Image (cartoon, rainbow, N blue to C red; front, side, top):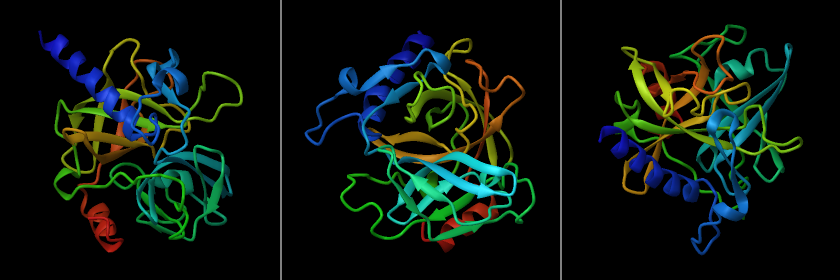
Length: 261
């Protein structure tokens, strides 16, 4: 009975999250059959609409090119993982789902420039021009002060541009369901796939992608960011993922300074 209830909730959540993250047109008609396809690898769902708030964050660093995911949380702010920006040689570029891009115009980071960040400090805010979202139809997904970290057992959806993609040349965001199974005292949490053996998980390129929680019927909030795989099994279906949450003092202070809390 518990499993049926959990799966039923997931089905409803899937319908809502696909609409929220760009799988319906302006009339609200679900286009999942036309524009979203099931992806067996990592158990995710790819969406081909372009108005998703999930973006790619590209940074040229002394280590090479950092290629991560991020989420738009206001008209001028994107959250991503700080480890993607270690040794950045310039401000990152933000790439939208339609392939167009915009140069960022600011960066707020609580981790020293050359230090490897880990939860709870694997967190950065990339700033974009005020008009960057104009005419794109993108609705930011907010951070809610009362929900800066999910509770144990929470059903979350995870979004990112990680590998592998289902077809060569596609660079589409993928969504998957996970359940929060462990929480640190502050700053991070661990989530497992809904399907322990074949469920969706994170992979290279998903870092900085959002964990999204439905906190009211049809209303969603960002509650964490992909930081790293629990172990070397990351990038395999069924592997667990460590997330940075927003309940550390440093992250809360930065969010407040940027007017996001």
